[in-house]
Image (cartoon, rainbow, N blue to C red; front, side, top):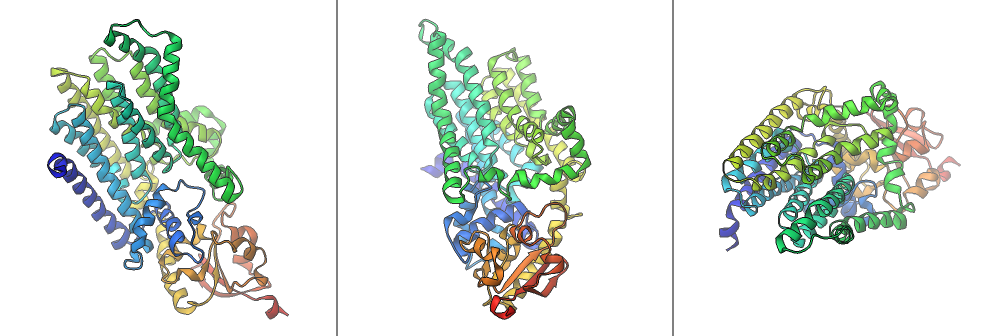
Length: 534
């Protein structure tokens, strides 16, 4: 029965997911490179199950934990398939499944809103096969699940705009909360949607209820009550999620804002931006920031322009619902502007791409409002907008001056992370062979590719182990046999080993003797314990 009713949707899901998975395996396993952020998410899940001190808290309290929690399920099969961890295929599987789910969601939403199956399929394929969206379906990053939850959040919100059924709003609220558990960008999206609710209920909702039921128009106070009730339905899940995350950070890490201000946080890592002359100039002149943000956002804006033109032709441009769409769209560049004002955003090209799924999620609703020939015009204009976006983003991927991170991932051109991973995957088997029963202390913030590639991960004492901090404070008195330390390239070291012993890599220490240097990137030191020193 389910197959008969949803067969086309399931087939679309399976085709997109399988295609993404095949390409992802080719990049991660055959070519041997995994995006560092994706691999670190796999590592967070890996520590929960296979570290020397396994516990759920090992998943980390900087990045939102849902991607790693989902990868944890895949990693249950790690003993049978080690490449799930060593080459990050657990992340590829998760991102591929969500890419397929996004295509199926768009198709199903179009059908629910009364669009022809061909139109719904066209929207889904133009989105999923967009080169940029397709890339994030197979590279294992958290963007793919986040994009799915954005699509679900906005599409259900749009369905509520059309039929005002609370069920759609409830689904939208829970999808927004799940988006938060994937990426922090869900917070400004929630703020923008709250503004959309305010505009809708104050200026549209109350009047439409009165018109539909032939009753007196709702008063301002009655509308404000409805705004309050609607906010509760939509925003309570994400607010609860945010408070829960703060609570977890407080009781486990001792700091409710650990995810914001720890040594591993984005704010700390962004300190290097001040050494970049381009960013230093922008930080000094907000107008340059706005120009930079506007340029980056414009690469994804063609579908929005198409919708606005359609609304202009359909005489619906100057409406409160247009402001709602713009508020949700601008939540993405708005966040980047605020972060850059605080000098804590690298302004990566991909940070701005979320405006694209937000707009595409609005498209089925927009087309459903049009009838007859006008709908055909709308389909043509939206299709043109999405094709233009595909062309623009294809060019961006080929140009390192625009999409530097994505270009280096696809080509390995000038990719230092790829070169490091090749070295680190050779370090792990060497340590397994020569020091299988030794205890090696290292900061998993930097050493995660080595740990994931090791067949004996329990020999590492890592950051999430309960005795890591005490051991690091006094290594000669600890039970640690060796310390594995990485070279600090520039700026302030982020790993705790280099923070505690800033001269260890270059000069060693009285209690440490150099055992081996790995291509100038890593060094292994033997710890001379107090009894040995005496």
